[in-house]
Image (cartoon, rainbow, N blue to C red; front, side, top):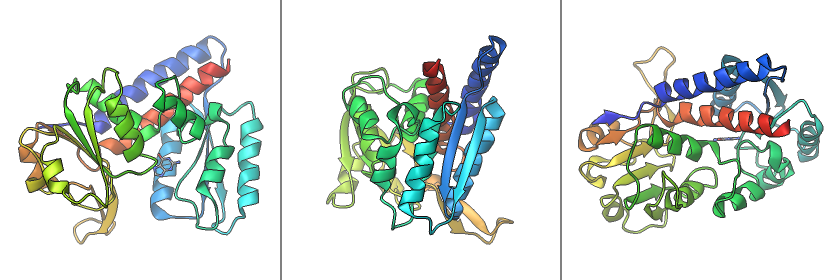
Length: 291
Ligand code: GUN
């Protein structure tokens, strides 16, 4: 079994991005600039957004964090999006999800101009992805593709099973793994909460991508010997061992599953850091297109 080390790979990718930023600045260009909007103070969202801002700093990007109260009206949020859309100094905008229930996520997502939608959630970017046209790919699926590519995982002709059909991960991941691209050409099965025979299906996966948000859902009996496992889950659970009182758990029961696999992502240190690095990569691409 070999670890798919997302932390290490993300650091390599961030080093490559930092080199590009330096060369842009050396030629008199401006630093790429990412803006993030955080509504409310959901603990996990706060952690993710802070990590994104910190990563911007590490690669030499400017960043702006707009914090809005959990009770903010949809109108005020949409107006913040509009201001950033119109701000020519900003190259990329993300609105951290989930949003409070009184705000329509799709309305907000559709308000972001596709050219600055570095999360790749706008229908135009998702539509372009479906058609295999240049687009911003959603950061988590893009990070997984990058990780599989850098570890030279053979995907062509393999059976890829995706567990979870979210707009952010499962659905786009299933499309990307089936595309006629270097990391792609899989036969894909997309499974979800209504799938009746999940274990029989997951046991046939050469590549198993798990993104349903249920800690340790995938157990050893659900996995084929030699499979490649990508664990997107990241749930904070109470722990008596850690100083903080919390521990991060993936959707895969790592200790029992790892001995059966050829490759597996750890949690933390797997998909999470790759998501952030992919967001930076999208922002760099956006900044270069703005010239
Ligand atoms: N919430 C969970 N993952 C993501 C992500 O990749 N982008 C945004 N904006 N919100 C998220």
